[in-house]
Amino acid sequence: MIPIKDNIPSKTYPFVTVALIIVNAAVFLYQLTLGMTGLEDFIYKTAAIPVEITSRFDIGPSAIVPLPFTLLTAMFVHGGLLHVGGNMLFLWIFGDNVEDRFGHVTFLIFYLLAGVAASMAHIMLEPRSEIPMVGASGAIAGVLGAYFLIFPRAQVNTLVILPLYISMVRLPALIFLGFWFFFQILNSGVSTSGGGVAWFAHVGGFIAGLAGALVYKALSAAFGK
Figure 1 (cartoon, rainbow, N blue to C red):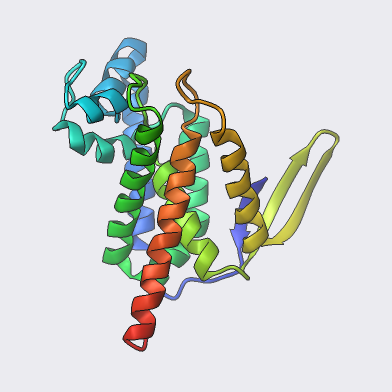
Figure 2 (figure 1 turned 90 degrees about the vertical axis):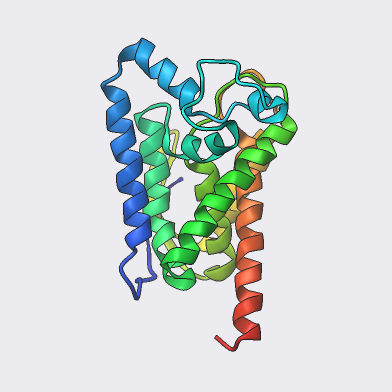
């Protein structure tokens, strides 16, 4: 299922969401200039590598930042066009409304913390893995978790592609994001030690997003917002 748009207009311009998309796109365009060898080297220098985080030892090539900060740099590096394109599509559709509700600065902090939480969820599952972990999907999963809790009745225009069937349908966010999360849980049951998608990072990011939204709602209620 591919989301196309939702039916909730933003009251403010999503400066942070747009900036994040621009930065991710710019980094990906830079990656395209590196060639295969240069790209692999760049990924190892910017990725969050579980064994480096848990052992606090750089296995090389040397990271461009202190090892704990690779949890941040990894969010802006992607493995291919579909990887970055899919992530930015989800961020564009769901990020603006969460930013609108949280406020620009709070949303940026929330996004980064959700990304770190997502990466740590994967690292807890695969602490000895030497496979680089990159991509914004963990942070975006946090955005989806917050959207799920705050805007459950929103309608999402969705392109459904199945064998011999393609259709555009409108689904409540509760159904669309609930199905997305269920799919992540199913796939997270498979070990990621062989490479591929860090499914458990998506699960961890989504749960972090739910927690962040719960905190926001509690504080809003306490202060009468």
